[in-house]
Image 1 (cartoon, rainbow, N blue to C red):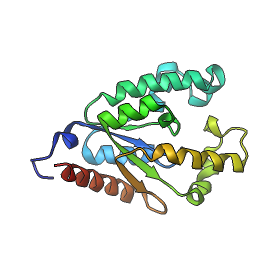
Image 2 (image 1 turned 135 degrees about the vertical axis):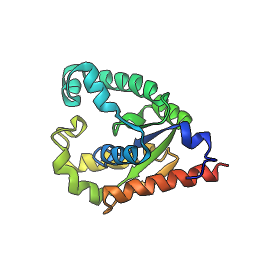
Image 3 (image 1 turned 90 degrees about the vertical axis):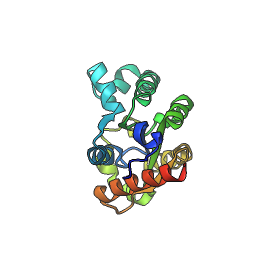
Image 4 (image 1 turned 30 degrees about the horizontal axis):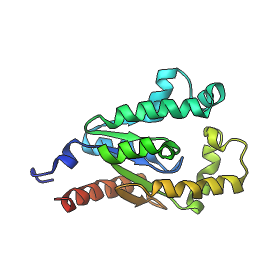
Length: 183
């Protein structure tokens, strides 16, 4: 990359959004490695702070408590420079989180079709509290309802049938293109 890169590229953190299980952590870690930046998973930060898994936080304290803690952690993380941040699938439901990330970071939406996501569902259902006790029809409705909130981004990458390495390269190329288009 040329030395005349803008501050957008050099300083802003990159935030990954998208439905649960779309690959935000996997892709985020790869992009962080390729760009020599720190990777931070917001949910893991919450788990470390509270000393319990997300599912246990939901069960013990409820979703409202988790969402308040999520807003606190993401607000702090979005102010950091040059980080790669993955946020939970429901984080962008909160207008404040959406706005702070859009204002202070480069927001990358990882998009996956319902058909492709459904193939991953069995790997996710036991660890995602929002999916617990829901029918397939309810989960499908949730998937499509959240698509509207994920439309608030700077970059959208469709990940259907693409290996994580390829998606990571698409993300980096898209960020480069975004940076040059804003000059």
